[in-house]
Image (cartoon, rainbow, N blue to C red; front, side):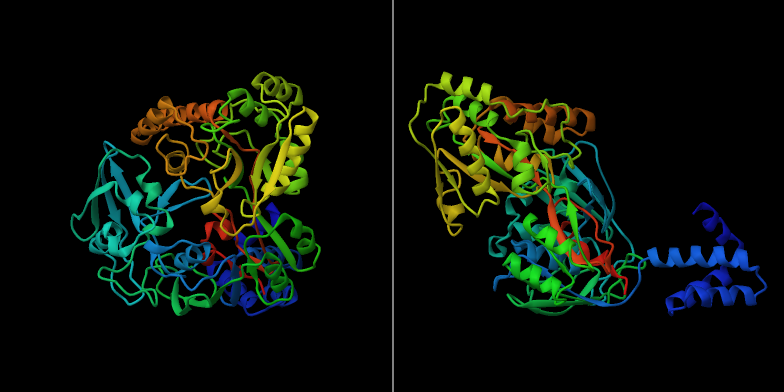
Length: 539
């Protein structure tokens, strides 16, 4: 391989361009050999160059083509207003049409996007410097006033922003000239660039109030949008990223039923789909011309034990339940190996603040029995509520019930319908399940689900030390110090909360083998819903 690459250096720029142009027009290896030998090159050297050039051309993204993509949801409430996005369908569409000040990479680290740089001295006062030469789809040049408008509208109750609580920390947003924006926070937050890289903070043109179409700076123009039906996106010829996007057009639809999505893919009706169940993987990969892309992420279904209700209010009972989680069997039987064994800590290994030094809690029925007997609960029936709404919770609950029998614990499974589960059952019973989607930062995850005053504090866990660490880490700009704080918080959750996290689920996308360029960003499937500007067709 190295020799073939070296052989390419004997070609001048003009000859190399001629060969690549011929390959783009469909030239075969024999055609390339003919071109090279006609120019006086030896057959041996020409053969090496033709092979290397063909391989390089095959691996390089190709421009052109149209694909049809299916998301997992569809609704007449589908929106092109970044502030109102609520479903994965919205996220995928808006990433076609808009950009944020920052973007998040595969480790959820913020990278420059519309902001080419940012700085802060105290974590409270921030300066964002905007990229030059960026235009909206209607031709207007991006400037600081567009950013100020986009960010301040989250505070307007009439906008009904889904990110109002996150945006509330920005108490002052102002333009310091056409290319600089100053943001002052109510309190220091070292993760502001992460927050601004999330979907709701896409930048729109100043003064925009109608969203029947999209006028952003993103890789595609909105040709058509019908909520609950479809959108059609066409390449933005003036996109600020050189050479991107590669596709000419993307039609995006929603198909809520997983089997219907798989059938549509294998019949050739769509080229790419998200939300594949592990049970469908073998069928897809066993069909020639199709494959599955896996993304390791922080998505998990968790056992919820309310510490403010019996029996979980007894610490020994809660510990017994955690020792009864047969994580390896759940990995094998429930998700068919498409996941990672977790350790009752909500930060997954793809996150830069994951604490790998926490000793793994084993599946240990002897310890479970010890703690259960110590709790004094006895043989009374203990209802465990599960539902298809919390993905894989029914299968997990069944395995927990089987383990419980072995130590004399009587678990009574209460399976409830998916409809209404999150409003009527989620963390409202002593024993149940939650399902937590990936979050872009440790701070957001801890603030939403584990602080004492968190709206979604599933287990009712209250720990003053933990609360203090969350606030301290948020304002800490030293990365090493923040890492240690987040490690300490993960230990506290592991040891004291009423949450059992047996697995992190891989996100599964399926696509035709002709589709290339799909990567992994653990915010969600479809490359963190940002697939559009990266994928291309090798047709």
